[in-house]
Length: 238
Length: 264
Image (cartoon, rainbow over all chains, first blue to last red; front, side):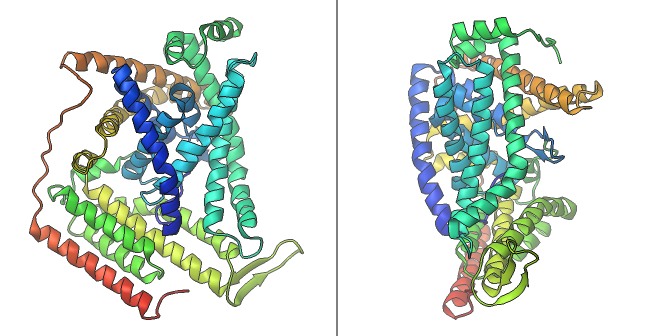
């Protein structure tokens, strides 16, 4: 769920754009460096970006009866690190505004801060914290995806609360109101997204473990130990 | 799953051959004026005029345009209702206090602010729709190159744009096959099928990326995609009405804000 075009006052649009731009610039600089090192990086990043766009356009089954979309940022931040994720997130959000009329141009900065920067940064912190511990890698993926998703909605609530503080209770009351509205559907959905991405990771590991190893998401030893404990082998063709 | 991409509509629009800069100037100009407007009148005027432009000269299907407006309208109404009870200021218009800890109040201040937000979303969304329904994304890429956006970012956008359609086609095929095999019949099955779908898509996307590298290597890829910019030159007969419209809208904004008509 994105903040829609025109919903935020122009002052807040400028503030969120100013916060988002340095991350975007850092992302482009990192992209340049990576391309100089390995020119194969751009096409692979491009198709992965397309995958994340499609992932965010697919309807996720929800226990609440409604539908929502995975953000895909948890998977992206583990594979491509936060700055590159900010670039991919920017492009995905821009295309969602231009191709699907989801979100908007004036609110792109605010949506970037919540979905492409804030959520992935906290998710990356969880990944770094759990990566080199004995915690099962599927649990790590679940935690990263679910935390990135929840933090995205916490930041979105904060952005809305700052723009529209409540008459009684100010920003805190407004934040509580927006977060409670989001939490009803988004907390179960974050858990489902975490489960889905953990299963996605499991299937990728079972079918193409070299891909995860090449991206440096987990070490060879961790991948082998995860594969040894996994028994449910999916069909090769769906 | 998205059923129709707005870019398909833009490719077939009657304004397809107008210079993209002129269309983006109109869309972004009216978006900025609506955004900074402290009164709902300016976004309302802008939204109505641009809707008429989209429906009559651009010839967008009214049914499709109506469908496009439904989603933002539902979201806006829901959000405005929350703002109506959240914000305050001015005199109390309506109050509902069934128990001690629930106090729903609508004041003149909250009503005027919510009305402003409603019409601002309306005006800004239609300004965005004007850009997306008349300007194909490929024209925007060429425009971005001209204004100095880093080439790596544009190249990445172009690859993502191209592969969205390929990955989407694969996603639809896999999803249909899963639905035919009752893959989404139960919640547990649905989560498993959806995960399999995403996993297969990731692997096939990665393979498509590796194929793309090989194909580009055969065409002497050196890190930059050269592309042909076939944009029509800027025509005065389309630019002058755009400038006149923005000047008029800006004039209304100035009159409304300095003439004491602005909503507090």
